[in-house]
Image 1 (cartoon, rainbow, N blue to C red):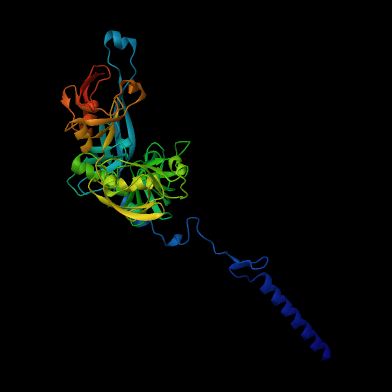
Image 2: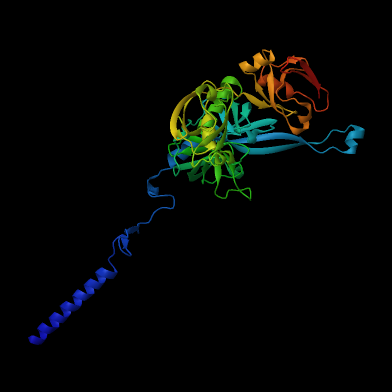
Length: 464
């Protein structure tokens, strides 16, 4: 009996050891606690698996947005006619250069039931004939309504008796980094292709020479996607797919779209005015880390530094000053110039914006009424001219014309700066729009002349 009792005690002790070892080595919590040294805060590491695109992947449904979008995205064909190179036979015998038809393809988005379609300018550039094909394989001839090279947006129209499926513009300012999006288009002529990704960045600028503002996404976009739709999970249009960054010409993880707020504004301007109305603050600006800002000893990391304020501009009238740092416009926080330019690109002359600036460490809010563009670079000559201010008109004794504010080096010897151009080949010039149009008609092979007025009131004629 005593022997049996001893065996029972030994068995019980062994079982306790086994159970303790199991608890210690096999039953672990979902969290691992790590502590080292004195007063060291613990670090919790979760062992719960997480999707590469973020938690909750199974809760996101793309099917409704995809079905809605593919029916509103069209395949765009651009037929262009190019002529072959000239030869001596062409010159001596008057032979016609051979004309070669070329077909380019891209995508477009139907934005109204009566057949208005938005696409990229580069998709339809130099077109002789445009054709669009819907997702149901129905084909239409398309007419170019208008285009804007700066934003790379173009507007097409097809005639149809039936209502077409279309997408509504969403608010691209409300798009969030990390938000799921779909890119829909026709890459490599593969019609109605849908890819998914997230918003990787906003207000992305691709060139220091052009202050464009793009939405960056990692949704796969390839040649043929240009002009297609970038939509959120509700199927709202938040961008027009436009470009990729790649050394191969194909998608490598970076795609860019024109924000819907900019595209919508360009489309509405083309419909209403026939061209794009640009509302400007009237400042020369630089990022806070620019040489001009650093030279001033600024220690801030975010914002846009005002380098100069244009006379009689909205910024001038509102009291903005050189050295002010723009921190916010309306409810949009401004970290860099591309964000400022992107937001203002959705505005028109006459619109008022609230500009929050930092001036010597103090914050000010100024109500600025945007105005039309005051200066342009003239074709052929590359003169930079601006509209006349009240002071200019009084100083020069004129009521119309444009003032030369900069000239290229080729014309520097003629002392043209600060003179007012009033005529070109006998035609009056009232403002920068007239000047841009008339100088655009100048032939590089003919002779032309323009008349200027000096500060002394003397008229000077120059022959090009």
